[in-house]
Length: 258
Image (cartoon, rainbow, N blue to C red):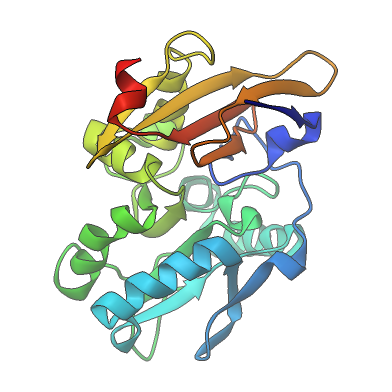
């Protein structure tokens, strides 16, 4: 076992952070951690881990032949400009549905990307990404690579955002699979994980011969958080951008039975 000392500020970083109308993005991303999505979209950038998985997915389906990267990481200033532009062009009602306020947009994290069918004219705010053809192929393949459709139909009251078929968010494995199988948005997933506190009752997710455990770790009050991890198995820790961390451990069937 090993004791991890997790800095308090780490609550606001990691692939599972929740950024929405109630939970603003607190970090200034290191632009060295970003990279262009592809040679055709040098201005569209993603966090490198998310980009690695997106690139593998697109290679799998030859996706860049028919799909364009419309928008990835945005600075706070870019989000502010987009929000103000939409208010002028589209009005408040439209903007509140489709454009997040500055510091409340997932695009500032580098973990979200908007995609659209490749065509001469693409709507930057609402690109065409239908539930058919290559776009639907992308959706079906996205989950194993750690991506979810972030704002699905019927969940508007939960996410605070209208349905956006074009907006995908990297959350990593196995979280994308768990969320998809259980029909959870990221908001609902974090609420669900609160039922599985660290050191008491982890959530087990079977994955072949491995049993992956996921636990919610409440952050220590006013100081760094100490966490005991088993270094004999792979693990990851992500902040939730609210009040704690998510510990994911890739064990095996024997670990689950103990």
